[in-house]
Image (tube, rainbow over all chains, first blue to last red; front, top):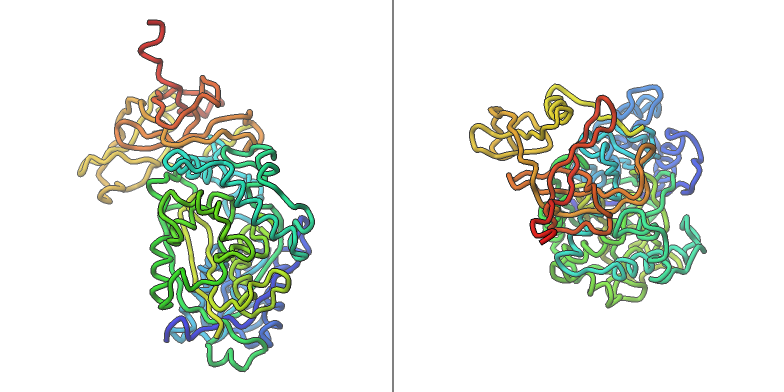
Length: 385
Length: 136
C-alpha cells in the first residue's frame, strides 16, 4: 500500500489562546474527541495512536498510556513528543496504516510540557542544552543565526522579512479563528518598528505564543470514503534531519537547505511538483523561515527568497498562497501541536471549508514543519480525493 | 542567576579547563578531526579514540545575533550570541564581548576571552582581535 491509500478523515483544533482551556490531558482528549467526531468515528474505532501522554499518572511521554485511560487496545503507537504532531506524526501514522499495523490512527494532542525546559515554557525559554543555555541562545536567537548569515551572503533585507511577516499576519488579522484576529493590519513599517528580539528579528517577525491542542484522524482511503467528509489523501511525505536539535549553533552552510531532500522525496512519491500546489501551509516560526522555504521548494533560486517575497505571489490571490489562515505568526502557535495545525489547515483548504480565506478550487496542498534553526524538517503533499 | 550547565563525565573536562583559563577541544586520534560540542565518538569517523587538546582560541565570526530579549534572569541585554569558527576547524556557540554590539561583523576575527559567571561556571566568550594596524 502507498501513502496515497491513506486518508485524513478527521481534524479538530481546540480553542487557541493565551490561557489554557483545561489541563494538558483534558485539552488533548478534547482534540482527540473533536477529530473523531469530525470523522464520524468513535473512540473504540481507534487502534493506532500518536498522542503524547502528558501525565500525571501513566508514564509521561508514553503514547501507550492513553490506552489505559481510553480503555482501548492499541495495535500501533507512535513515539511521543515530535512524533505525535504535524507532518512527522501524520506520515508515521500513515506508514503504520499503509503497512497494516493499524487501521484508524489519531495523531495530535494538547500542550506538551517540554521535557528539557527549565520552566515549562516554550519559545523564549532555555531548553536544557548544555552548550547553548549558558549563552542565552534560546529558539529565536538560534534561528536568527541562520537568517543573519543568509542576509550576509545574499543581501536579504529586514524589509523583505517584514513583508513576509506583515502579509501572513494580515491573513490572521482577517480570520475570526486566529488568536490575533483584528489586531492588524500591519505594514512593513509596523513590523520594523516593533521591538527587536534578536537581530534581525523584531517582535512581529516572530510567531505568537499561545496554547491549545489539535488532532487528526487517519485511516485507509477505502474506509475514509464512507465517513463524514470527502477524504484528503496523503500523496507523499518526506523528512530531513540534521543532528540534535538546538545543541549546536545552526550554521547556514549545514542547515540552509534543510528540507530540500524531504520536499523532493514527497513530490516524487506524489508524482507532483511545486507547480501543482494550490496552497502552502508552511511552518512560520519567523519570517525568515518562509523566505528560506521559497528557496528549498524551488519557487526561486538559493538566495533569491527575498526578492521572490517582493513579488507577493504568496499573498492572498497570488499564485502561491502561503498560510491564508494566518499561520503561526498570527493564527495559532501552541508548542508542538501547531505542527498539526499546519496539516489541518491544508486539509480544510482541500475540503473547501475555509470560508473567507478559502483558496478557490484547491486540489493540492502542502504542509511543512520546523526548519533550519532546529535542524529538522518534515513535509507532506495532500490531495483532494 | 544565569543557568548553570548540567555537565557530564564527557563534558566536565571542558568546563574545568575553562575554569583554568584554557580552551580545549576533542581531537580524533584516528582522523584528526576536531569536534565540538562534545561527543563520545568522533563526528568525522565515529572513532571512540580521541583526546582533549588545547585550542589557540582564535577564529572568525560565522554568524551572530544581537539579543534584546533576555533568555531569563542573569542576562543583561543586549548581548551578542555568535557562532565562531575556530581556525582549527571547529565551531562554538558563544558571546562576542568587549565591543559594542553594533560593531560586531560576520567575518570579524576574534579571540577567546574567559568570563567568570559564578564560582563554578567560566564561559569561553570571544572579543575582537586587536587591530594590528591600530595606532600606526
